[in-house]
Image (cartoon, rainbow, N blue to C red; front, side, top):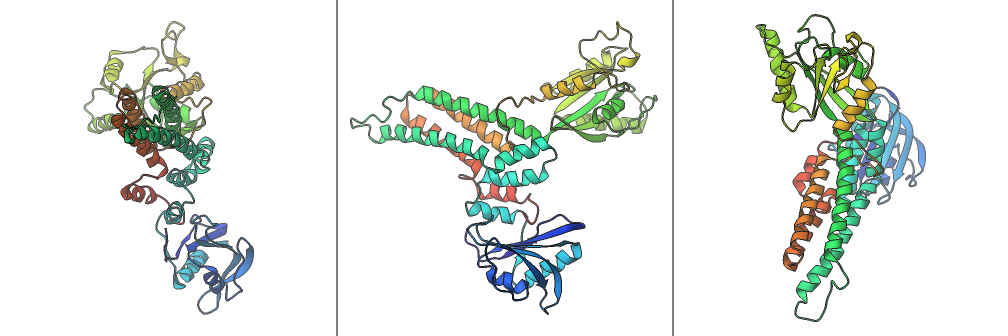
Length: 443
């Protein structure tokens, strides 16, 4: 990417802080750096220099460190200047205004990372990992995003692509030289190679699915009859008092949302109004919202009073859930139950005493398929998983048509394109615009 534009943005979050950073990127920024520092000598690359940052009249705006990175040895691949001053919103805005006076324009969201991508400093999966690392809310998510950012995910993708390219060369060689005594597939068991590729894609797809779960979390809805302890259970799982708890049936009339991390996996919990027949217009509206929440959920916690067992209302509720939706039946109020009542085939808990809550959390992880195992987890996105599944589908078809070289070559090409779209070696402009528009300004 060759751009004559100089872009600038505040790279630190709004608010008061000890340090605030403005980042500038573009061609030939040594002169730019000298002017903003009051005419000092051109800076040396990668040397931090204490400087006074001045406005157009020579008045000092702030003072701090100026660091110059000469392209292509920089994040964007262009010349980059970082101005590290005090973390005052007012001072940073004045300093940014001075950068704009000197010819820079305000950077668009994600434009610094976009330039790094176009200048081949990072690939598309790494670029997405930049945003994911910034947004990571747990240590597990941060570690997984860092694996992608450092290229571990991309390395595995490229390894698969290289194997596909090698096989394509051999297959297409046989097509091009079909009339000559040249066997490009000699000693190559096509089906064995395709099977190994499928296994490798399956392992990577499993890792990506785990990473997608870490990134997006699981939308979990708590449903059940009134007064079975859904709100108490929400408070017990999250270990915070999010929901009002009383003995009066129908206390919860609107959705109550809270999030909790279980082994680094975010569960976005939604407490709902109890399901029952009622003439109360407000309660009816709450029940309608309950079913709307169910439609948007990934997992349902069906809460029942252990003293009543699974009632007909509970069974009707279970039958109304989407067939493919994972669900966990939770028998609450174990602290009030007799020994006979506790003999339920399900998860037995007490939201009051905390009994069974650790076991319930483990069950939730199992329900959503959390099992990182020995494979490294990458903080993947839905488009990564979809591309891997698409590649897997083409490899399956390739195995079916392995005896017809023309058809085999086409399926291998499509599988390669699907995998290459993950790293951006085969991506549309629309996809790039969608990805980078979601970045924060200054990154």
